[in-house]
Image (spheres, rainbow, N blue to C red):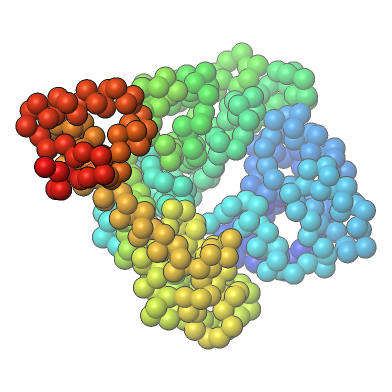
Length: 456
């Protein structure tokens, strides 16, 4: 993670920046808004800006927008600067941190705003197989497509690949294609020349050049506009990019990793994604299984998150009860690892004793985990019943299925033709014609007020 501090904050953030650097972050300083913008423009990128609230944050945000630079901004200032803090948030700052700072608070804000996570823990054989494949291809320069549901850890896997590659000492640059508006993404990726558009006051180095020598992660690649996909394809094929407004191509030396939580083959069929780009990206596919299919990871991750958030909140380390652990293993976890992490963070805060029981594990709406498990079981049973009924119809003619449906409905309403026709959505005349046909074929048809097993 790269952190850029803008303004005279260096001395006041010493402890916080040391904590960030101990966690692997790279910290740079810019004494003014202009120098900060120049640093970003020159390709010395940042994942987060910490800005003195007394600086002209409005001008900084306007400069970022004008030059199509996408990076979150967090304002910092003394508690007496209430008006400045309000103005900073109105100008577009994501958060406000009061000074003197709490180092752990800043670390938490950095993690929340920049969404930086390097936790990579697995125990389940299903995940071990994926990691084994990742180890095999990590040192190559082949493009890798990482797929899986939201929250399964696709970005963490991308960082693992980079850390085990021959490019590990170089930059790892991540671009979220879903979070950046279409009109800004081209400049974000490829950069632009001075005068390329209104607001382009100088040359801007894009992420492709910024990542040269290292790894570029294109997160949620499926959200990229088809027009921009053509430019990306050329960059991957020829290792050349064209800055917006540029007159000559620029060579780049990068490894590209892409992620998607959607079916890209389906997107190709729908005309939303280029097939040739999919072939270029999908040299190796790492498909991350959802958490519900890797139960061996749930207990290990749960213990890890309890340790993590006990330390972060200054709370004595909690332990999971046997009942709570079993409930975690039965839960469906549609949000995968991200949902599990948030749930355990909440449990650490809500638990009143040394042991976290099932009652302390709540969903955001206050629903207990046991209720979620029960609802999931009902849904599973309903799906299995529907599948059984569907399987029972396979191999039968439509006429046979229709006859059984009509007669079963007639049984249900005790032979009342009018009610049966209403339920079936057909006219009473159609129903009578069908029943006459069945009677002619020798099938027992219940009369009014009767069922088939009581009909004459």
